[in-house]
Length: 69
Image 1 (tube, helix red, strand yellow):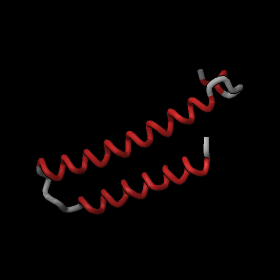
Image 2 (cartoon, rainbow, N blue to C red):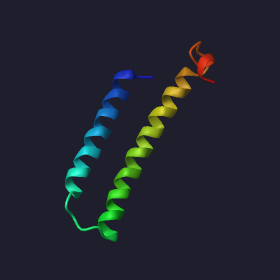
Image 3 (cartoon, helix red, strand yellow):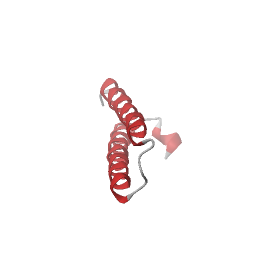
Image 4 (cartoon, one colour):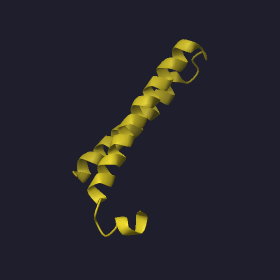
């Protein structure tokens, strides 16, 4: 697991979500904007899920996991 890479990816996700919120602020609440907004969130959630999975796979078998699992 490359800790620095994962931190950088999480920083990028946070920045993207922040920018998305600003981009959609004040736009009409319709199907088109909602679909785009939800698509952006879905992509962010997928990246976070993959990151968590990578962390959990790294922890598998470590002494730390005995307290979590």
